[in-house]
Amino acid sequence: MNIVKATQKYEDWLGSHIRIVEPDLKFKHEQMAGGPFPFLRATFYRWLQLWPEVCAKLDQAPRLLSVGDLHVENFGTWRDCEGRLVWGINDFDEAGVYPYTMDLVRLAASALLAIRAHRLAMKPKESVAAILAGYERSMESGGRAFVLGENHE
Image 1 (tube, rainbow, N blue to C red):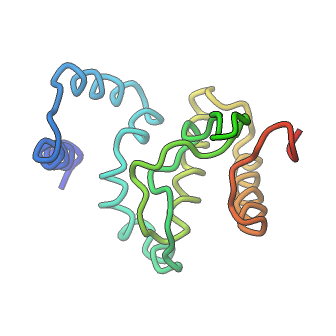
Image 2: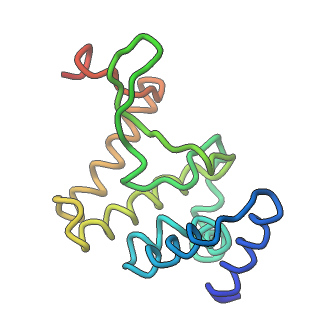
């Protein structure tokens, strides 16, 4: 199945669950055509289709609750229930049980695309190393978001 058919199938499925706003969908398609990074952000459904084939060995990793559609723009700040400023992952609409490697590979792919598009000021090897190191530290500390100004000045 090519990307056009995959997108149509996904949008048909989506339309059976929610009301599609055609001008918004047209805008999304325009954004997708803007380059590889926005295309990646908008096509998690296609990632899921291709993952088991393209990353067959990584697909065998242990499965756990994952973000799924993880990319560099899914990190940000918000206020928690106590009014503290928090930084972490802020988009869980595609969360599910996936191989843990999927989040890492998708985040790394998004970082590399963002670097190529001059939207992230890092070197490719540094970004991938930072992702892996951050993941390891996060797992060791319980995987919580950062409360800014308390322990992470």
